[in-house]
Image (cartoon, rainbow, N blue to C red; front, side, top):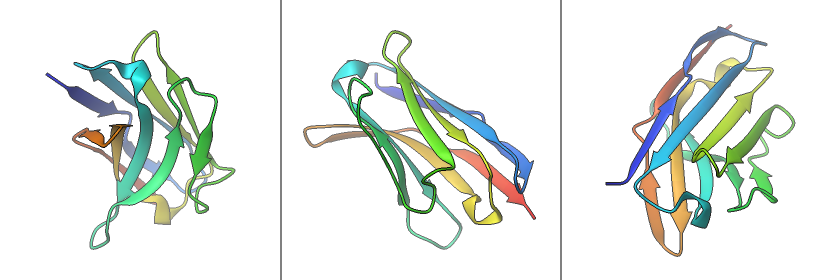
Length: 116
């Protein structure tokens, strides 16, 4: 069955870095664009970053542009999110998402907490 398993979350001080990873299985990974979303307490889930199927095109939310980098390895069926210069407002549960032609798969999320 389809699985997206996130890892790498944790507690970090403001200005620090974390690297999230998402391991995919159960579908043709290279046929899906991959996204990271996040949801802070009391707020709606919001888009963070996207990478195209082959990795040639990336997009970022304005709030993370220049600080976060999304990448993928189609040989290993993984997508990563390198997060630098973290801010307390980056605190959220981060979700991995696979998207293709109306099909959407989600991971269970990983908590990122940034202390001031």
